[in-house]
Length: 429
Image (cartoon, rainbow, N blue to C red; front, side, top):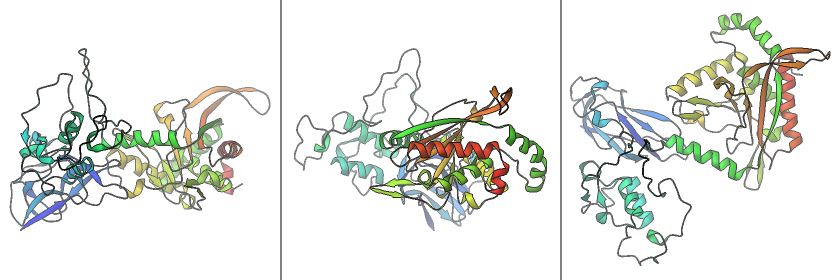
């Protein structure tokens, strides 16, 4: 009996993914819960496991294809026996397409999609065709097995392809389908000829696209300002050095600086609730919970898993959660739910050597705290003496629509006070 494997629900507001690679090929044996394919969304990379044991019968969505939630990925012949080839033996043809090089090769001869209809098109292609009022049978198809791909439709639109004849022709100056001219998108830009000295043109991943979109959204929407301060990390470093061995022995996790910053941020957020709020239409939402996003850099891009109810967690629980986030972020194992929501974010550019930077708000949040590199600098102490201090610049970027300058500066000063006297975090003063 053939079992259909479809694209699972990908999370709130996520409707599409790209097929990155197949771990099995037709004829391979498949164990129950064994990963079949890797999908990439605009937030995470996920593996789709097999719900049954059997043999791979047919792959429907090839590597590189865009698929929507519920779309058919492959067929598994339940109970059948297949070959025992390992994942790494899968043919190279199933790997994601290689990036385009500087020399453009002739396009393969396109096959007309004369028999194409909305019933045979992938959901993504059918949606594009409907939105642009196109006749699929008039568009040359270059996909596997003569299938029509999103790139085929995009190329058709770029070349001035006409809409379905049943509709009234749009004015010559208007885009295909009669739509009003829109702001150019990545796909709508004119094709660029590679420089003969050498260029590599690589299509942006969904994660990179959403990072670019959200960062620009923050700049376009929020009235973003940044205030700076510096923290003498000496007292905190002393506490850490005194207790790190006993802490790790008892809790099986290292004592870092991030738990101190999370604890200090929660105290400051409670005292200045606007920093923990957000603007929703003409309303201000003040949140009585403290879900702290922890920015984590990965080879694929920046992700921000959320530490839920940080105010209720101990130092050990915070450090354990952050270490787990880092491991799973690098392996692409974070779930969608773990990266949704969040009321405030902390990012640490210091791990990469950054001395000072202006972090960008993670919308719809209203504030973000930026940590930086600890550097020895001459400072004047309370007695008026010049000493060597272990100093860190910190930055608080905020949305001026909801947070006033006084609140933003007070928030950062409060964090400075708490971290320069870590005992205050324990006795809550």
